[in-house]
Image (cartoon, rainbow, N blue to C red; front, side, top):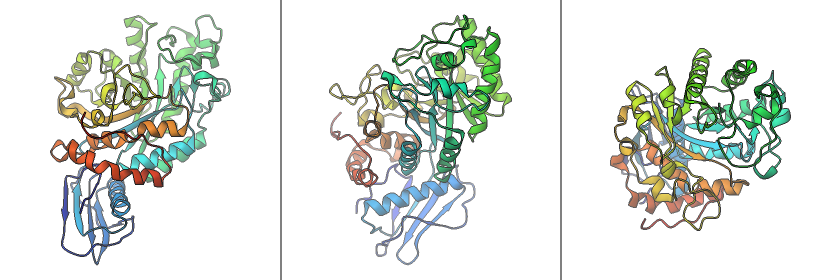
Length: 439
Protein backbone atom coordinates (compact mmCIF):
# COMPACT_ATOMS: atom_id res chain seq x y z
CA UNK A 1 0.00 0.00 0.00
CA UNK A 2 1.09 3.61 -0.59
CA UNK A 3 2.37 5.44 2.47
CA UNK A 4 2.61 9.13 1.61
CA UNK A 5 4.84 10.23 4.49
CA UNK A 6 6.49 13.65 4.29
CA UNK A 7 9.35 14.27 5.04
CA UNK A 8 10.59 11.01 3.56
CA UNK A 9 12.21 8.81 6.23
CA UNK A 10 15.69 7.36 5.91
CA UNK A 11 14.28 3.84 6.35
CA UNK A 12 10.69 2.61 6.19
CA UNK A 13 10.16 -1.15 6.25
CA UNK A 14 6.79 -2.85 5.93
CA UNK A 15 6.52 -5.91 8.18
CA UNK A 16 4.32 -8.97 8.07
CA UNK A 17 1.11 -8.77 10.02
CA UNK A 18 -2.39 -7.36 9.92
CA UNK A 19 -2.90 -3.59 9.80
CA UNK A 20 -3.29 -1.92 13.18
CA UNK A 21 -6.07 0.70 13.33
CA UNK A 22 -4.11 2.58 15.97
CA UNK A 23 -4.09 5.88 17.78
CA UNK A 24 -2.16 8.87 16.51
CA UNK A 25 -0.08 9.02 19.69
CA UNK A 26 2.82 6.54 19.90
CA UNK A 27 3.78 5.40 23.36
CA UNK A 28 7.36 6.19 24.31
CA UNK A 29 9.72 3.43 25.33
CA UNK A 30 13.39 3.57 26.22
CA UNK A 31 15.43 6.29 24.55
CA UNK A 32 17.79 5.36 21.76
CA UNK A 33 21.38 6.25 22.57
CA UNK A 34 23.76 7.95 20.13
CA UNK A 35 20.91 9.14 17.94
CA UNK A 36 21.21 12.42 16.08
CA UNK A 37 19.27 15.30 17.59
CA UNK A 38 15.63 14.81 16.64
CA UNK A 39 16.01 11.20 15.49
CA UNK A 40 13.54 8.45 16.33
CA UNK A 41 12.43 4.89 15.70
CA UNK A 42 8.70 4.24 15.22
CA UNK A 43 7.18 0.77 15.18
CA UNK A 44 3.64 -0.37 14.46
CA UNK A 45 2.64 -3.92 15.28
CA UNK A 46 -0.66 -5.75 14.99
CA UNK A 47 -0.49 -6.71 18.66
CA UNK A 48 1.60 -3.91 20.13
CA UNK A 49 0.20 -0.86 18.36
CA UNK A 50 2.43 2.19 18.12
CA UNK A 51 5.71 2.49 20.01
CA UNK A 52 8.61 4.87 19.56
CA UNK A 53 12.17 5.33 20.72
CA UNK A 54 13.71 8.79 20.70
CA UNK A 55 16.80 10.37 22.16
CA UNK A 56 15.03 13.59 23.13
CA UNK A 57 11.73 15.46 23.11
CA UNK A 58 12.26 16.65 19.54
CA UNK A 59 12.67 13.08 18.36
CA UNK A 60 9.50 12.10 20.19
CA UNK A 61 7.69 14.99 18.48
CA UNK A 62 8.94 13.82 15.09
CA UNK A 63 7.73 10.29 15.82
CA UNK A 64 4.34 11.67 16.82
CA UNK A 65 4.16 13.63 13.55
CA UNK A 66 4.89 10.51 11.52
CA UNK A 67 2.27 8.56 13.47
CA UNK A 68 -0.30 11.30 12.89
CA UNK A 69 0.32 11.27 9.15
CA UNK A 70 0.20 7.47 8.99
CA UNK A 71 -3.12 7.30 10.80
CA UNK A 72 -4.83 10.14 8.94
CA UNK A 73 -3.49 9.24 5.50
CA UNK A 74 -4.32 5.52 5.72
CA UNK A 75 -7.81 6.05 7.14
CA UNK A 76 -6.60 4.69 10.50
CA UNK A 77 -5.57 1.32 9.03
CA UNK A 78 -1.80 1.40 9.40
CA UNK A 79 0.26 -1.60 8.22
CA UNK A 80 2.81 -3.19 10.49
CA UNK A 81 6.01 -1.28 9.88
CA UNK A 82 9.20 0.15 11.32
CA UNK A 83 10.63 3.59 10.58
CA UNK A 84 14.18 4.56 11.50
CA UNK A 85 14.88 8.22 10.89
CA UNK A 86 16.88 11.30 11.86
CA UNK A 87 17.00 14.81 10.40
CA UNK A 88 19.63 15.94 7.94
CA UNK A 89 19.90 19.44 9.45
CA UNK A 90 19.43 20.64 13.05
CA UNK A 91 17.73 23.90 11.95
CA UNK A 92 14.51 23.29 10.01
CA UNK A 93 12.66 26.54 10.12
CA UNK A 94 9.78 28.70 8.99
CA UNK A 95 9.85 32.49 9.24
CA UNK A 96 6.60 34.43 9.51
CA UNK A 97 6.59 38.22 9.15
CA UNK A 98 4.01 39.59 11.59
CA UNK A 99 5.02 43.21 10.92
CA UNK A 100 3.79 44.09 7.43
CA UNK A 101 0.47 42.49 8.43
CA UNK A 102 -0.05 41.26 11.97
CA UNK A 103 -1.06 37.69 12.79
CA UNK A 104 -1.81 36.91 16.41
CA UNK A 105 -1.60 33.88 18.69
CA UNK A 106 -4.58 31.99 17.24
CA UNK A 107 -3.12 31.97 13.73
CA UNK A 108 0.41 31.32 14.99
CA UNK A 109 -0.79 28.25 16.89
CA UNK A 110 -2.13 26.89 13.58
CA UNK A 111 1.22 27.67 11.98
CA UNK A 112 2.98 25.78 14.78
CA UNK A 113 0.68 22.77 14.36
CA UNK A 114 1.42 22.71 10.63
CA UNK A 115 5.16 23.11 11.18
CA UNK A 116 5.17 20.24 13.67
CA UNK A 117 3.24 18.01 11.27
CA UNK A 118 6.14 18.30 8.83
CA UNK A 119 8.89 18.06 11.47
CA UNK A 120 10.07 21.65 11.37
CA UNK A 121 11.67 22.69 14.65
CA UNK A 122 12.09 26.49 14.44
CA UNK A 123 9.45 29.20 14.12
CA UNK A 124 11.28 32.44 13.35
CA UNK A 125 9.05 35.43 14.10
CA UNK A 126 9.97 38.69 12.40
CA UNK A 127 8.78 40.99 15.18
CA UNK A 128 9.94 44.50 14.24
CA UNK A 129 9.99 46.44 11.01
CA UNK A 130 9.13 49.82 9.55
CA UNK A 131 5.39 49.12 9.67
CA UNK A 132 5.04 48.01 13.29
CA UNK A 133 6.60 46.90 16.57
CA UNK A 134 5.15 43.55 17.67
CA UNK A 135 6.59 42.55 21.07
CA UNK A 136 6.64 44.16 24.48
CA UNK A 137 9.74 45.73 26.00
CA UNK A 138 8.52 46.15 29.58
CA UNK A 139 10.61 49.20 30.48
CA UNK A 140 9.81 50.88 27.14
CA UNK A 141 6.01 50.64 26.91
CA UNK A 142 5.94 53.37 24.27
CA UNK A 143 7.08 50.84 21.66
CA UNK A 144 3.78 48.96 21.63
CA UNK A 145 1.70 51.93 22.76
CA UNK A 146 2.82 54.12 19.85
CA UNK A 147 4.14 51.73 17.19
CA UNK A 148 2.07 48.53 17.20
CA UNK A 149 -1.26 49.83 15.87
CA UNK A 150 -0.19 50.14 12.26
CA UNK A 151 0.58 47.90 9.31
CA UNK A 152 0.78 47.99 5.52
CA UNK A 153 -2.07 50.00 3.97
CA UNK A 154 -3.14 51.30 7.38
CA UNK A 155 -4.56 48.15 8.96
CA UNK A 156 -5.07 47.79 12.71
CA UNK A 157 -1.79 46.06 13.51
CA UNK A 158 -1.34 44.45 16.92
CA UNK A 159 1.38 42.98 19.09
CA UNK A 160 2.31 39.94 21.16
CA UNK A 161 2.26 40.64 24.88
CA UNK A 162 4.81 39.07 27.20
CA UNK A 163 2.10 36.58 28.16
CA UNK A 164 1.25 35.87 24.50
CA UNK A 165 4.86 35.12 23.64
CA UNK A 166 5.27 32.94 26.72
CA UNK A 167 2.16 30.93 25.85
CA UNK A 168 3.26 30.51 22.22
CA UNK A 169 6.73 29.47 23.38
CA UNK A 170 5.24 26.78 25.61
CA UNK A 171 2.84 25.64 22.87
CA UNK A 172 5.76 25.39 20.45
CA UNK A 173 7.94 23.49 22.91
CA UNK A 174 5.25 20.85 23.35
CA UNK A 175 5.59 20.23 19.60
CA UNK A 176 9.38 20.15 19.53
CA UNK A 177 9.64 23.68 18.11
CA UNK A 178 11.73 26.61 19.33
CA UNK A 179 10.56 30.17 18.70
CA UNK A 180 13.37 32.46 17.55
CA UNK A 181 12.40 36.11 17.73
CA UNK A 182 13.83 38.77 15.43
CA UNK A 183 14.43 42.45 16.07
CA UNK A 184 15.60 43.83 12.71
CA UNK A 185 18.58 46.18 13.15
CA UNK A 186 19.80 48.78 12.27
CA UNK A 187 17.49 49.23 9.27
CA UNK A 188 13.79 48.44 9.03
CA UNK A 189 13.36 50.57 12.16
CA UNK A 190 10.80 53.27 11.27
CA UNK A 191 8.41 51.95 13.94
CA UNK A 192 11.09 52.38 16.62
CA UNK A 193 11.98 55.83 15.26
CA UNK A 194 8.31 56.78 15.57
CA UNK A 195 7.95 55.49 19.12
CA UNK A 196 11.25 56.83 20.51
CA UNK A 197 12.01 60.32 19.16
CA UNK A 198 15.49 60.40 20.72
CA UNK A 199 16.57 57.70 18.26
CA UNK A 200 16.35 60.32 15.49
CA UNK A 201 19.19 62.80 14.86
CA UNK A 202 16.78 65.74 15.09
CA UNK A 203 14.99 64.36 18.16
CA UNK A 204 11.65 64.36 16.36
CA UNK A 205 9.46 61.29 15.96
CA UNK A 206 9.26 59.73 12.52
CA UNK A 207 5.85 59.57 10.89
CA UNK A 208 3.99 56.25 10.96
CA UNK A 209 4.98 54.25 7.89
CA UNK A 210 2.49 51.96 6.15
CA UNK A 211 4.17 51.45 2.79
CA UNK A 212 6.39 48.62 1.57
CA UNK A 213 9.60 50.34 0.44
CA UNK A 214 12.84 49.41 2.21
CA UNK A 215 16.13 51.10 3.07
CA UNK A 216 14.72 54.42 4.32
CA UNK A 217 15.26 53.99 8.08
CA UNK A 218 18.19 53.26 10.36
CA UNK A 219 19.44 53.49 13.91
CA UNK A 220 22.74 55.26 14.55
CA UNK A 221 25.31 54.35 17.17
CA UNK A 222 26.53 57.92 17.51
CA UNK A 223 23.27 59.05 19.14
CA UNK A 224 23.28 58.87 22.98
CA UNK A 225 19.97 57.00 23.17
CA UNK A 226 20.85 54.15 20.79
CA UNK A 227 23.04 51.94 22.99
CA UNK A 228 20.57 52.07 25.88
CA UNK A 229 17.69 51.31 23.53
CA UNK A 230 19.51 48.28 22.14
CA UNK A 231 20.26 47.02 25.64
CA UNK A 232 16.57 47.22 26.54
CA UNK A 233 15.04 45.95 23.29
CA UNK A 234 17.48 43.11 22.60
CA UNK A 235 17.56 42.21 26.28
CA UNK A 236 13.77 41.89 26.41
CA UNK A 237 13.71 39.59 23.38
CA UNK A 238 16.49 37.43 24.81
CA UNK A 239 14.58 37.15 28.08
CA UNK A 240 11.25 36.31 26.45
CA UNK A 241 12.51 33.55 24.12
CA UNK A 242 14.12 30.21 24.81
CA UNK A 243 16.78 28.35 22.89
CA UNK A 244 20.26 29.40 21.89
CA UNK A 245 19.54 32.03 19.24
CA UNK A 246 18.11 35.49 18.70
CA UNK A 247 17.83 37.07 15.24
CA UNK A 248 19.03 40.66 14.95
CA UNK A 249 18.54 41.43 11.26
CA UNK A 250 21.19 43.41 9.41
CA UNK A 251 19.55 43.51 5.96
CA UNK A 252 18.88 46.29 3.46
CA UNK A 253 20.71 49.08 5.33
CA UNK A 254 21.27 51.94 2.87
CA UNK A 255 21.73 55.03 5.05
CA UNK A 256 24.98 54.11 6.83
CA UNK A 257 28.50 54.11 5.50
CA UNK A 258 30.21 50.69 5.38
CA UNK A 259 32.22 51.68 8.45
CA UNK A 260 29.14 52.79 10.38
CA UNK A 261 27.30 49.62 9.40
CA UNK A 262 30.17 47.34 10.47
CA UNK A 263 30.48 49.11 13.82
CA UNK A 264 26.76 48.71 14.45
CA UNK A 265 26.74 45.01 13.57
CA UNK A 266 29.74 44.38 15.81
CA UNK A 267 28.08 46.24 18.69
CA UNK A 268 24.92 44.13 18.39
CA UNK A 269 26.92 40.93 17.95
CA UNK A 270 28.83 41.57 21.18
CA UNK A 271 25.61 42.52 23.00
CA UNK A 272 23.77 39.32 22.08
CA UNK A 273 26.75 37.14 23.00
CA UNK A 274 27.10 38.94 26.33
CA UNK A 275 23.41 38.27 27.02
CA UNK A 276 23.99 34.54 26.51
CA UNK A 277 22.60 33.81 23.04
CA UNK A 278 24.04 33.33 19.59
CA UNK A 279 23.10 36.09 17.13
CA UNK A 280 21.68 35.32 13.70
CA UNK A 281 22.13 37.96 10.99
CA UNK A 282 20.90 38.26 7.41
CA UNK A 283 23.67 37.69 4.88
CA UNK A 284 24.66 41.36 4.44
CA UNK A 285 26.35 41.24 7.86
CA UNK A 286 28.91 38.65 6.74
CA UNK A 287 31.95 40.95 6.31
CA UNK A 288 31.40 42.63 9.69
CA UNK A 289 31.13 39.61 11.97
CA UNK A 290 33.83 39.02 14.57
CA UNK A 291 32.82 35.91 16.49
CA UNK A 292 32.35 32.47 14.84
CA UNK A 293 29.38 31.78 17.10
CA UNK A 294 27.38 34.26 15.00
CA UNK A 295 25.19 32.69 12.30
CA UNK A 296 24.36 34.01 8.84
CA UNK A 297 21.09 33.55 6.97
CA UNK A 298 21.42 33.61 3.20
CA UNK A 299 18.30 34.98 1.53
CA UNK A 300 19.10 37.08 -1.56
CA UNK A 301 19.42 34.66 -4.46
CA UNK A 302 20.36 37.59 -6.72
CA UNK A 303 23.38 38.62 -4.61
CA UNK A 304 26.97 37.39 -4.74
CA UNK A 305 27.31 34.73 -2.02
CA UNK A 306 31.09 35.17 -1.79
CA UNK A 307 30.99 37.09 1.55
CA UNK A 308 28.90 34.29 3.09
CA UNK A 309 31.34 31.67 1.79
CA UNK A 310 34.23 33.68 3.23
CA UNK A 311 32.49 33.93 6.61
CA UNK A 312 31.88 30.17 6.62
CA UNK A 313 35.62 29.69 6.09
CA UNK A 314 36.10 31.59 9.37
CA UNK A 315 33.76 29.26 11.23
CA UNK A 316 30.34 30.88 10.85
CA UNK A 317 27.38 28.56 10.30
CA UNK A 318 24.82 29.35 7.61
CA UNK A 319 21.04 28.97 7.35
CA UNK A 320 19.86 28.70 3.75
CA UNK A 321 16.71 30.59 2.74
CA UNK A 322 17.36 31.34 -0.94
CA UNK A 323 14.63 33.60 -2.30
CA UNK A 324 14.21 31.59 -5.50
CA UNK A 325 13.60 28.36 -3.53
CA UNK A 326 12.48 29.09 0.02
CA UNK A 327 10.70 32.46 -0.03
CA UNK A 328 7.06 31.44 0.05
CA UNK A 329 5.88 34.99 -0.51
CA UNK A 330 7.07 34.65 -4.11
CA UNK A 331 4.27 34.12 -6.59
CA UNK A 332 3.68 30.55 -7.74
CA UNK A 333 3.52 31.84 -11.32
CA UNK A 334 2.75 35.02 -13.24
CA UNK A 335 -0.99 34.59 -12.68
CA UNK A 336 -0.78 34.31 -8.88
CA UNK A 337 -2.73 37.14 -7.25
CA UNK A 338 -0.73 37.31 -4.01
CA UNK A 339 2.97 37.66 -3.49
CA UNK A 340 6.05 39.26 -5.01
CA UNK A 341 8.40 38.21 -7.79
CA UNK A 342 11.79 39.87 -7.19
CA UNK A 343 13.38 36.37 -6.89
CA UNK A 344 11.25 34.94 -9.70
CA UNK A 345 8.40 32.49 -9.34
CA UNK A 346 8.56 29.65 -6.81
CA UNK A 347 6.23 26.78 -7.58
CA UNK A 348 6.15 23.51 -5.64
CA UNK A 349 8.89 21.85 -7.64
CA UNK A 350 11.16 24.89 -7.26
CA UNK A 351 10.73 24.64 -3.49
CA UNK A 352 11.48 20.91 -3.55
CA UNK A 353 14.03 20.20 -6.24
CA UNK A 354 17.30 21.54 -4.81
CA UNK A 355 20.10 20.32 -2.58
CA UNK A 356 21.34 22.68 0.16
CA UNK A 357 24.77 21.05 0.07
CA UNK A 358 25.35 22.12 -3.54
CA UNK A 359 23.35 25.36 -3.68
CA UNK A 360 26.22 27.77 -2.97
CA UNK A 361 29.49 27.05 -4.76
CA UNK A 362 32.35 26.94 -2.30
CA UNK A 363 30.18 26.70 0.81
CA UNK A 364 31.31 23.66 2.81
CA UNK A 365 28.37 21.33 3.49
CA UNK A 366 29.43 21.09 7.14
CA UNK A 367 28.89 24.87 7.51
CA UNK A 368 25.16 24.53 6.80
CA UNK A 369 23.18 24.77 10.03
CA UNK A 370 19.91 24.24 8.24
CA UNK A 371 17.15 25.37 5.91
CA UNK A 372 14.36 27.87 6.53
CA UNK A 373 11.28 28.81 4.53
CA UNK A 374 10.18 32.43 4.77
CA UNK A 375 6.85 34.17 4.32
CA UNK A 376 6.87 37.95 4.20
CA UNK A 377 3.47 39.59 4.41
CA UNK A 378 3.43 42.73 2.28
CA UNK A 379 0.51 41.23 0.29
CA UNK A 380 -0.70 38.71 2.89
CA UNK A 381 -3.71 40.15 4.71
CA UNK A 382 -5.82 37.22 5.91
CA UNK A 383 -5.23 33.82 7.45
CA UNK A 384 -6.39 32.17 4.23
CA UNK A 385 -3.86 34.28 2.30
CA UNK A 386 -1.12 33.07 4.62
CA UNK A 387 -1.88 29.35 4.40
CA UNK A 388 -2.56 29.41 0.67
CA UNK A 389 1.01 30.66 0.19
CA UNK A 390 2.45 28.12 2.64
CA UNK A 391 0.58 25.19 1.14
CA UNK A 392 1.48 23.13 -0.77
CA UNK A 393 5.06 24.48 -0.77
CA UNK A 394 5.91 24.15 2.94
CA UNK A 395 6.03 20.30 2.90
CA UNK A 396 8.50 20.58 0.01
CA UNK A 397 10.87 22.77 2.05
CA UNK A 398 10.36 20.51 5.07
CA UNK A 399 11.51 17.48 3.12
CA UNK A 400 14.56 19.36 1.82
CA UNK A 401 15.46 20.23 5.41
CA UNK A 402 14.82 16.77 6.89
CA UNK A 403 15.59 14.10 4.31
CA UNK A 404 18.92 13.14 2.78
CA UNK A 405 19.05 13.31 -1.04
CA UNK A 406 19.17 9.54 -1.39
CA UNK A 407 15.56 9.15 -0.22
CA UNK A 408 14.15 12.17 -2.04
CA UNK A 409 12.67 12.16 -5.53
CA UNK A 410 10.36 14.73 -7.08
CA UNK A 411 8.22 12.11 -8.82
CA UNK A 412 7.51 10.26 -5.55
CA UNK A 413 6.85 13.52 -3.69
CA UNK A 414 4.47 14.75 -6.39
CA UNK A 415 2.61 11.43 -6.30
CA UNK A 416 2.22 11.50 -2.51
CA UNK A 417 1.48 15.18 -1.90
CA UNK A 418 -2.17 15.29 -3.08
CA UNK A 419 -3.15 12.93 -0.26
CA UNK A 420 -2.04 15.59 2.23
CA UNK A 421 -4.81 17.95 1.14
CA UNK A 422 -7.12 15.94 3.40
CA UNK A 423 -4.89 16.79 6.38
CA UNK A 424 -5.06 20.49 5.53
CA UNK A 425 -8.81 20.40 4.98
CA UNK A 426 -9.33 18.64 8.31
CA UNK A 427 -7.46 21.50 10.01
CA UNK A 428 -9.34 24.21 8.12
CA UNK A 429 -6.23 25.42 6.29
CA UNK A 430 -6.49 27.10 2.91
CA UNK A 431 -4.17 25.79 0.22
CA UNK A 432 -3.42 26.52 -3.41
CA UNK A 433 -4.33 24.00 -6.09
CA UNK A 434 -1.05 23.69 -7.94
CA UNK A 435 -0.15 21.27 -10.77
CA UNK A 436 2.50 18.73 -9.75
CA UNK A 437 3.50 17.49 -13.18
CA UNK A 438 6.26 18.87 -15.35
CA UNK A 439 8.20 21.94 -14.32
